[in-house]
Every structure is written in structure tokens, then in C-alpha cells.
Amino acid sequence: MSNRDDLMAAAKRRLRETGFTRTTARDLAGDAGVSLAAIGYHFGSKEALLSQAMIEATADWVHDLEAALASEIDPTAPLATRFETIWTRILEVGAANRQIWAANFEVSPYIDTMPEVREVMAAAQEKAREGLAELFQGAVRPTDPAADRAVGAFHYALMTGVLAQWLIDPERAPTAKELTRALKIIAADVTGS
Image (cartoon, rainbow, N blue to C red):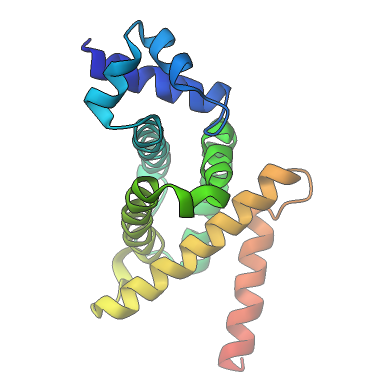
């Protein structure tokens, strides 16, 4: 592996073990077996390295989720069926990646002081909204880009809220079944049925 690869591997490990704000440049360089200067040379800053590692680790999480869903989701199944199956898997895969989610929330209060991290995370959020719209809507995705974005934004907001609840109190956080029941209740209220 190259120094860049070694630094990325070290950053992903540290995010899982130490978190974003408690990881030092010395930790990263020592774990990777490189000089402190290598961080600046390859990534510009410790924060840029950790944010890129967080994006890659989150992408790994999404890949794991997609793999878990690949054989289970019928894109033409009713939304409630897809919704519950997807949420069951989100919570299972989320549990296996608890520290990555914690690191995502950990960096939020400092986002105004780390513009490079904000830029990377904003781009990742937009991509997540697109992916979630595709995942949840399946074969019935709207062809209107604004509607597609709205659907993705809704699911992203729900996902971050549920995962925040799950990080704090996994025993009382909403389950996939409860979320699906709530969706049906809200849909019936909105449509008047």
C-alpha cells in the first residue's frame, strides 16, 4: 500500500475506535507509519483526511446496505413493503457501523469551523438523497427531478433522525415495523382514507 492508502486505512480505523474530534494527526501518522507531513501532502489537513475517510466508510456502509437489499427488494412491491424491508436492513447495517454514524454526528457542531469538511459532507448528503430516493421509490420513481429530490430529502431526514435516536437509546428507538405503521397512519391522514 502507498502512504496515502495507509493514511486512509488508519483514518477509517480511528473513526471507528476514537471518533472524529478525538483523533489527532499524530495518531494517524503513527498508525499509518508515516510522517506528520504526509497528511498535509496527501490530504491537506487532518480534518480533510478524516472527512474523506468518513465519506468512504459511509460509502462502505451504503454498499453493505445495497448488498443486503439486492436479493430482498422487489422494486414493484408496494411502498410500505419496500419501506419496512429497507428500514429493517438500515437498522441492522447501522448497528454494525455504529461508530461511523457517531462520527458523522460528532463533527456536526464544528462544521462551521471546517469548510473543507462541510464541502465534502454537503456533496455526500446530496448523493445520499439521490440514492435514497432510488432505493425507496424503486420502479415508481418520479420523473420530475424536484419531486425525486424531495423524496430523497424526506428519507434522508428520516434516516438521520432515526439513527440519532438509535445511537442515544437503541432499545427505545423506532423499529422498522413502527416506522412503517407511522407511514401508513400519516398517508391515510393526508389522503383522507
